[in-house]
Amino acid sequence: MVTEASNTRVDHASRIIIATPKAIFQAMTDVEALSSWRAPKGMTAVFDRFEARPNGQYQVTMLYPDDLHGCGKSEPDRDIVHGRFVELVPFEQIVEDVQFVGPDPSYAGTMRVTTILSPVAGGTKVVISCENVPVGIKEADHAEGLASTLKNLALFIE
Image 1 (cartoon, rainbow, N blue to C red):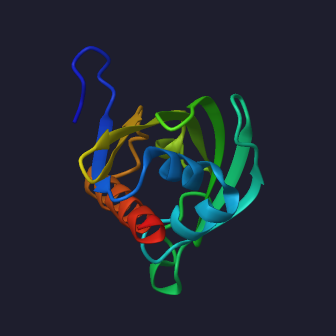
Image 2: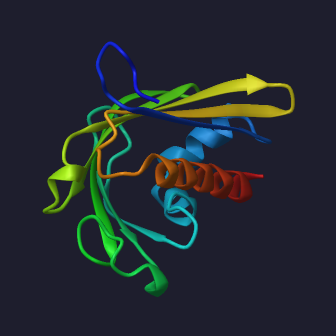
Image 3: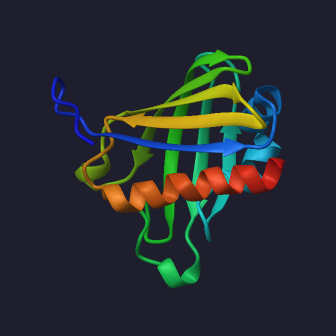
Protein backbone atom coordinates (compact mmCIF):
# COMPACT_ATOMS: atom_id res chain seq x y z
CA MET A 1 0.00 0.00 0.00
CA VAL A 2 1.26 3.50 -0.80
CA THR A 3 0.21 6.34 1.47
CA GLU A 4 -0.99 9.44 -0.34
CA ALA A 5 0.61 12.10 1.84
CA SER A 6 4.18 10.88 1.76
CA ASN A 7 4.18 8.71 -1.37
CA THR A 8 6.07 6.15 0.74
CA ARG A 9 5.18 2.48 0.67
CA VAL A 10 3.98 0.95 3.92
CA ASP A 11 3.66 -2.84 4.22
CA HIS A 12 1.66 -4.53 6.97
CA ALA A 13 1.30 -8.03 8.34
CA SER A 14 -0.55 -9.41 11.34
CA ARG A 15 -1.28 -12.64 13.13
CA ILE A 16 -2.94 -13.74 16.34
CA ILE A 17 -0.48 -15.75 18.40
CA ILE A 18 -1.53 -17.94 21.31
CA ALA A 19 0.73 -16.32 23.91
CA THR A 20 0.78 -13.29 26.17
CA PRO A 21 2.15 -9.94 25.02
CA LYS A 22 4.85 -10.37 27.68
CA ALA A 23 6.03 -13.71 26.25
CA ILE A 24 6.04 -12.33 22.70
CA PHE A 25 7.88 -9.15 23.71
CA GLN A 26 10.51 -11.28 25.45
CA ALA A 27 10.90 -13.47 22.34
CA MET A 28 11.40 -10.30 20.29
CA THR A 29 14.06 -8.82 22.57
CA ASP A 30 16.13 -11.91 23.38
CA VAL A 31 18.89 -12.57 20.84
CA GLU A 32 18.86 -16.35 21.29
CA ALA A 33 15.12 -16.48 20.70
CA LEU A 34 15.34 -14.12 17.71
CA SER A 35 18.09 -16.23 16.15
CA SER A 36 15.73 -19.18 16.03
CA TRP A 37 12.61 -17.56 14.55
CA ARG A 38 13.30 -14.12 12.98
CA ALA A 39 14.49 -15.22 9.53
CA PRO A 40 11.83 -15.95 6.91
CA LYS A 41 11.24 -19.54 5.79
CA GLY A 42 14.38 -21.28 4.58
CA MET A 43 16.74 -18.55 5.77
CA THR A 44 19.03 -18.43 8.81
CA ALA A 45 19.58 -15.40 11.07
CA VAL A 46 22.96 -14.72 12.66
CA PHE A 47 23.16 -11.75 15.02
CA ASP A 48 26.59 -10.14 15.06
CA ARG A 49 25.60 -7.48 17.61
CA PHE A 50 22.47 -7.01 19.72
CA GLU A 51 21.56 -4.37 22.31
CA ALA A 52 17.85 -4.56 23.22
CA ARG A 53 17.41 -1.07 24.69
CA PRO A 54 16.29 2.30 23.34
CA ASN A 55 18.92 3.46 20.82
CA GLY A 56 20.54 0.03 21.10
CA GLN A 57 22.11 -1.24 17.90
CA TYR A 58 22.07 -4.63 16.24
CA GLN A 59 23.39 -6.26 13.12
CA VAL A 60 21.90 -9.40 11.68
CA THR A 61 22.99 -11.44 8.69
CA MET A 62 20.20 -13.34 6.96
CA LEU A 63 21.62 -16.26 5.01
CA TYR A 64 19.78 -17.64 1.99
CA PRO A 65 19.65 -21.40 1.31
CA ASP A 66 21.67 -22.73 -1.64
CA ASP A 67 18.62 -22.86 -3.94
CA LEU A 68 18.12 -19.08 -3.48
CA HIS A 69 21.78 -18.13 -4.02
CA GLY A 70 21.83 -14.84 -5.91
CA CYS A 71 18.81 -13.36 -4.11
CA GLY A 72 20.82 -11.52 -1.47
CA LYS A 73 20.73 -7.74 -1.14
CA SER A 74 24.21 -7.42 0.44
CA GLU A 75 25.98 -10.36 -1.19
CA PRO A 76 24.62 -13.13 -3.43
CA ASP A 77 23.84 -15.39 -0.45
CA ARG A 78 22.94 -12.89 2.30
CA ASP A 79 21.23 -9.77 3.51
CA ILE A 80 23.11 -7.78 6.13
CA VAL A 81 20.90 -5.49 8.16
CA HIS A 82 21.93 -2.75 10.58
CA GLY A 83 19.19 -1.96 13.08
CA ARG A 84 18.49 0.41 15.91
CA PHE A 85 15.79 0.14 18.55
CA VAL A 86 14.03 3.50 18.49
CA GLU A 87 11.47 2.62 21.15
CA LEU A 88 10.77 -0.36 23.39
CA VAL A 89 7.50 -0.23 25.33
CA PRO A 90 7.47 -3.46 27.34
CA PHE A 91 4.75 -5.88 26.28
CA GLU A 92 3.16 -3.32 23.90
CA GLN A 93 5.38 -1.98 21.12
CA ILE A 94 8.79 -2.19 19.48
CA VAL A 95 9.97 0.42 16.98
CA GLU A 96 13.11 -0.26 14.93
CA ASP A 97 14.96 1.55 12.16
CA VAL A 98 16.67 -0.84 9.76
CA GLN A 99 19.02 -0.40 6.83
CA PHE A 100 20.23 -2.97 4.32
CA VAL A 101 23.98 -3.03 3.71
CA GLY A 102 24.90 -3.40 0.06
CA PRO A 103 25.78 -1.80 -3.24
CA ASP A 104 22.29 -1.65 -4.83
CA PRO A 105 20.69 1.79 -4.31
CA SER A 106 17.20 0.27 -4.66
CA TYR A 107 17.66 -1.16 -1.14
CA ALA A 108 19.04 2.06 0.37
CA GLY A 109 17.32 4.12 3.03
CA THR A 110 16.00 3.55 6.50
CA MET A 111 12.92 1.41 6.92
CA ARG A 112 10.91 1.97 10.12
CA VAL A 113 9.48 -1.28 11.52
CA THR A 114 6.80 -0.94 14.19
CA THR A 115 5.48 -4.01 15.98
CA ILE A 116 2.37 -3.61 18.12
CA LEU A 117 1.23 -6.28 20.59
CA SER A 118 -2.45 -6.17 21.54
CA PRO A 119 -4.11 -8.66 23.88
CA VAL A 120 -7.11 -10.40 22.32
CA ALA A 121 -9.27 -13.33 23.36
CA GLY A 122 -7.03 -16.38 23.35
CA GLY A 123 -3.72 -14.61 22.76
CA THR A 124 -2.08 -11.55 21.26
CA LYS A 125 -2.57 -9.81 17.95
CA VAL A 126 0.86 -8.97 16.53
CA VAL A 127 0.83 -6.24 13.89
CA ILE A 128 3.99 -5.32 11.97
CA SER A 129 4.08 -2.13 9.90
CA CYS A 130 7.07 -1.31 7.70
CA GLU A 131 7.35 2.30 6.52
CA ASN A 132 9.66 3.59 3.80
CA VAL A 133 10.14 0.13 2.32
CA PRO A 134 13.05 0.22 -0.15
CA VAL A 135 11.83 0.09 -3.76
CA GLY A 136 14.00 -2.98 -4.43
CA ILE A 137 11.85 -5.10 -2.12
CA LYS A 138 8.92 -6.46 -4.09
CA GLU A 139 5.63 -6.05 -2.26
CA ALA A 140 4.63 -9.70 -2.73
CA ASP A 141 8.02 -10.95 -1.52
CA HIS A 142 7.86 -8.68 1.52
CA ALA A 143 4.33 -9.84 2.38
CA GLU A 144 5.46 -13.45 2.12
CA GLY A 145 8.56 -12.80 4.26
CA LEU A 146 6.60 -10.96 6.98
CA ALA A 147 3.94 -13.68 7.10
CA SER A 148 6.66 -16.33 7.30
CA THR A 149 8.38 -14.51 10.16
CA LEU A 150 5.11 -14.23 12.10
CA LYS A 151 4.44 -17.92 11.49
CA ASN A 152 7.93 -18.75 12.77
CA LEU A 153 7.25 -16.65 15.88
CA ALA A 154 3.98 -18.48 16.47
CA LEU A 155 5.64 -21.89 16.05
CA PHE A 156 8.46 -20.83 18.39
CA ILE A 157 6.26 -19.50 21.18
CA GLU A 158 3.07 -21.53 20.99
